[in-house]
Amino acid sequence: MKEKILNILLGERLRDSELAGEKFNVLWGIPVFASDAISSVSYAGEEILLVLIPVLGYASYHSFLPIVAAIIGLLAILVFCYRQTIDAYPQGGGAYIVANANLGETYGLIAGGALIIGYVLTVAVSACAGAAAVTSAFPELSSMKVGIALLLIALLTWGNLRGLRESAVMFGVPTYLFILVMIALIITGLIRFMTGNYTPAQIQLVTTDSTEMLLFVILRAFASGCTALTGVEAVANGVPNFKAPETVNAKKVLYAMAGFVCLIFLGVSVLICLYQITPNEHVTAVSQLAAAVFGGGSIMFYIVQIMTVVILTLAANTAFAGLPLIMALMAKDNYLPKRLVYRGARLNYSNGILFLFGAASVLVIAFRASQHLLLPLYASGVFISFLLSQLGMLKHWMLHKGEGWKLKALVNGFGTVITACTLVIILIMKFTQGAWVTLLCIILLVYLMLRIRQNYDRVQADLSLSSIEEARSLLRSSTSSKVIIPVQSLSRSFIKTLNCATSCGFSEIEFYHVSSSEERALQLKKEIEALQIPASTFRYDVTPYRNTEDVLLRHIEAAQDALAPHEHLTVMIGRLVVKHRSHRILHNRTNENIIARMEKYRNVYVFTVPYLAK
Image 1 (tube, rainbow, N blue to C red):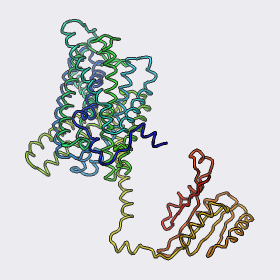
Image 2 (cartoon, helix red, strand yellow; image 1 turned 90 degrees about the vertical axis):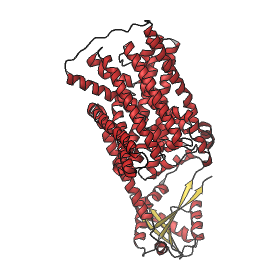
Image 3 (cartoon, rainbow, N blue to C red; image 1 turned 60 degrees about the vertical axis):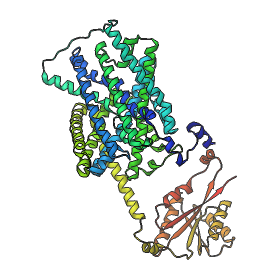
């Protein structure tokens, strides 16, 4: 039944040979990997104005477009840099792989931690921004903002659990519709303004005579607007998800993404200036722009709102495509749990998808679905990965050289300087607003990943054999050994366990009983001895403290301590199994607890003999 339900919700299980068919071509790769960057135009301009308007007033619009132009220029630099990363590291992983290979383990983990946090924030911010777009169009839903954001994340999780190809088709068409709608908004807005059909409302002119103050405000606005660059690294991170030739298709998607972002971000920014849109806590900038251009309550106004919600939701889909792959690469290197490496029924990294769902949902709830509170945490982590990626690529060219390496090194060197300067600006301007939280989380995540690696290394060292001779020396002789069978009463489950023990040919069988009454123990001893089991003994302990488990385990520990070198002890326990899962609550789990505690005994073999109750 469970399998049928999962097949209906997620689709039929796919064969390993079908993985190639699940990968993306350019057409579907654009909405999956570029939607994050494209969607940022819906809130990046607003974030800039939130800094400028309270200080500069009307004069904000004189500084707004130059800041946008600087951000677009930075985007162009990053695109050229990541183009080289795609060629040099087609296995994907982006900043993590580049930094780990060229700068060392610590820098690689910092980059990986920054990417993990950045992708989680991508989902949370996108869902919150999508919920804000919904409540802008329907203010009566404002009290349900958190629930709307969680619903959007849940829908994305479901779509991605269905597989790469289905999620691309499911979410791809709306991305292209958003692009068309935004182009229509830009063209209509420009025509309407040029024909004099709209007169923007004047806001108060504020001036400042302090050059230092003006510079501080502009730098802070630039740091806020850099959220438009989130998602640029997604293509380089997910190269293996593209169809062959992977690198060619990945670079085409990278160029298309840059083109769409430049067109829409610049166009929307120009309209914001022309229509003098001002930030509003309850209505997004794009919503105000759509109302000014198409008229509030018009069909096109609601279409813009709907498509904004869709693209903001799909921006989170970029993280669902990128993060599970990066976590799988890090898990292969023993920095994250191994279960993240395994593909699910639909050939996706389902455990990574579920992790992303849980982490993003926690952030949405914790920050009450406010993207304005989450965004200061966002850009700093993104630019840490940018910087380490560029620095790693610079060292890569200097070490490996190759054809045209000097020009490539120059490009990545310039990218290193620019991203370093931008990161410093963001950290200074956003530190007190939450950037410090991101830094702290990255440090904690790096520490956790190092501990995970230490654990895997320790276990591997314990499991590994240096030679065949060592393996032979550890082999035990085939001489039958002693088995302890805990017994509480004479039952069918006990008889089945006893039959299993006798069929294994143990040389000695010990029945062990813990009771609160010596009279009850002696009665059980008489019943067991009546079975006339060869080479068997009956031992018991009496305890008035109802600590049956502890007494049993102390007895087994004592038996283990008495073992000679290379000897082992076997414990065989009967376990009651019920047909219906709902009936498990009716039976205690004493045996399961005992077995779990005995797993820590190195020279004790533990066997469970299930007995299915009718």
